[in-house]
Length: 214
Image 1 (cartoon, rainbow, N blue to C red):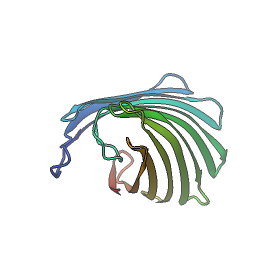
Image 2 (cartoon, one colour):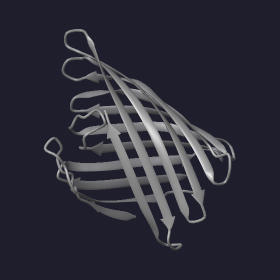
Image 3 (cartoon, rainbow, N blue to C red):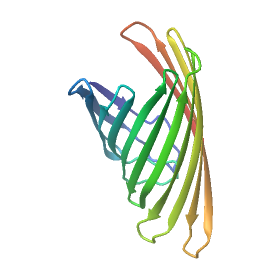
Image 4 (spheres, one colour):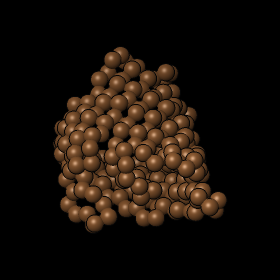
């Protein structure tokens, strides 16, 4: 189990503050089946997550997750949104794995289905590499206009004794149909950086630095 509290240190006039408090946890029902949940509330309204995963074989894990949030997405739009993700991850060897996911997104403004796949590769005990591809179509609830989404990403990670570091780059292209029949493009770039340091067997320090622009 865990709990968390977050606060917004700074925000300009175009973005609402997002103070939030929440709790969550996971429970192992059997040796192969795990369920987890999270609930929170804050300035942007309620949020939550509910998920389950099942170890189908020694190499394959299948999972279903549902999430509800009010934060602004990478497309720049606010509003309550929910995401239903169903997928499977298979370990191809001791150093590589692949996953496949179907993601259904439902929001105040639009909804749709996207498909994602990714490969992770660990050539050594210290280094890991990963790549992802995401394609799909979202539909505006009011106008019926479509948004064709294409996205991809790369990630590199390094771990040594008590230290773990990773950096990733994601690129997204949304091609949106306009009311006059024309199309408009939005390109989004996202940089993710994560770090962990194991202070003691019971405690660790976690750092995250993300930057996105479009």
